[in-house]
Image (cartoon, rainbow, N blue to C red; front, side, top):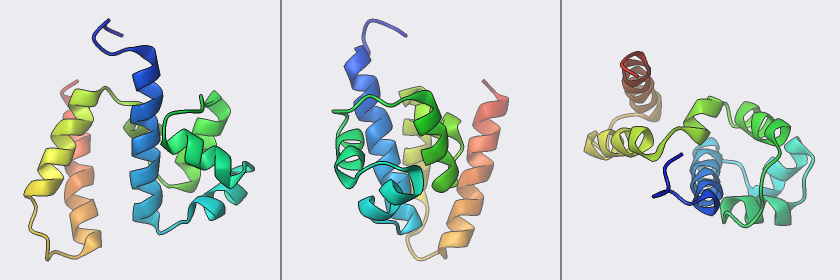
Length: 113
């Protein structure tokens, strides 16, 4: 990890990604907490980057949210380019089609890594 990305920023970035994935799944913080055996306060703290995650907890969160763990911990430039692509998609396309396009873009970006 480069010195331009301080270690504490890693937890903030992961937390932001967890929050986005949780909201896309339509889960409340409380429901996610129940499913990964944490408290709602812990989920809040994870999403705000105030609580460090154990690796097995990150795997559980990834599984519950049906998000590849690599998406939660990918370097910022990979996710930023995917986020830009998502913003460029028309807002009126159905969620399943949007997800399909984004999963294809993610697969392509991984194959070029």
